[in-house]
Amino acid sequence: MSEHPDIAGNLETILNRIGKAAQACGRSDDAVALVAVSKRQPEARIDAALAAGHRLFGENRVQEAQAHWSHRRDQYPDLELRLIGPLQTNKAADAIALFDVIETVDRLKLARILAKEMRAQGKKTRLYIQINTGAEPQKAGLLPEELADFLAEARDGLGLDFEGLMCIPPVEEPAGLHFALLAKLAREHGLEKLSMGMSADYETAIALGASSVRVGTGVFGARDTIV
Image (cartoon, rainbow, N blue to C red; front, top):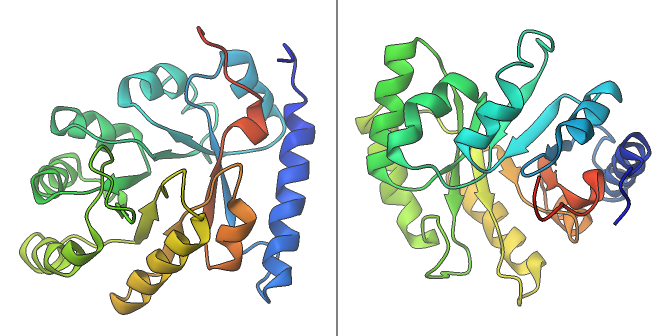
């Protein structure tokens, strides 16, 4: 692993590929946002991405995200932070305080607590629903057939607005099948945004309608085992 990956160059390359993939399917070259996944990355690599002008980042854990970003908020007022990992209910207040977007809402108990925390903090955090498109027992997310009932309760009962859907396909199956399913569910339920696609498959995701892709290794290089 390189100790000094060319993060500015990596960002430029990926953004160019995203733009070309979008244009290839008749979309504008700025239709897809790049979420740089900064989990378990050293401070110097995060600073390099910020110095290159990137402002959209994803984190998996609330506590690590606080360590990465709490002291950078004032310095970068245009920063956008997304939680892309599972959220425990006891971390909901901290998540609302820190993140602009939570992409992993996956149960009514969590939705209720998020609604309460947004009211308490006077903040309207943007929300996505995570779908377990592969019905994997070890993975978070609603099953596709649970989405309608969840939305009915969360929208009507809790007054929550959801921006879109998110998924992480099974590694052993063609990702495109899962991206197509997520896009179908979004259309059926009037949800505009799709967070899908990672370093290995984001161009496929773009062809199937992704509005944002989550790329870690492609931006920052391989993660250190200890940082």
